[in-house]
Image (tube, rainbow, N blue to C red; front, side, top):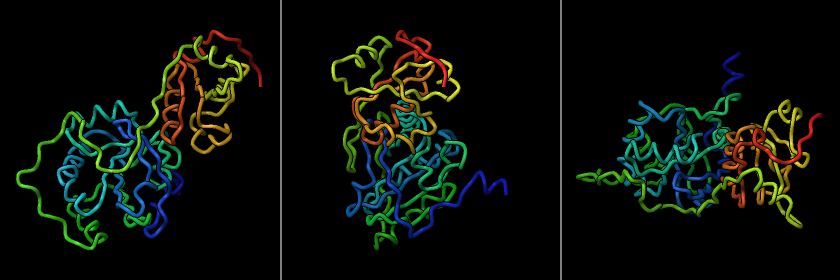
Length: 288
């Protein structure tokens, strides 16, 4: 009973794929909708960026060109921020791009996370070019089995392995072979800079405090709106805008994650207050 409360069954095969809009480790904005009618997509949700996941991912990346010959794009997915994903990809020496999934939002859509903890679980999802889930299984299956599955979806055999395989692009500067557009970058600002932006005549900016309710009621900016960071993925529409948003927390860490999330869904002009409320130089109020 406890396990069923903490875990859920993977999204069934044959279900329509849930939407996905995430930032790749190179700053590219990847939207699943861009692939519909063109390519199949394999999403590899990774719980940890270490062995044995790293070794498995190397094997998958070594067969990347064979998957691409079957019109299948590959992506890894993890909750680490883009700079950490980029460093890991360089360390492992693979070309397959990694997508930043803040708060495991996309993973939850495919039930590739826990119900409570916002963390990806090892799970592979294959979505065909019509936007239908064709494979969704926990764990990291053998690469050969995944090739067979994609081959069946494509209706043809994969080409033989390249001999010799091309050297890995450890620098991660290869060209993206799949659709995407540059994602907006989060910009860090000081407290004084944030206050100046909010004070502009007809300012389009809003300030969003992503701390807990207790922290918010203890001390906050009088103009701040409150949405805790772990509630942002299903409440961001309450803000009424995904552009010109300034995020603040206590020290700058949670607000940075919130800002990254909003850029991952297409937000622009997104800012993070360095030092958070601990260094806030503007007016403060308290109470509910």
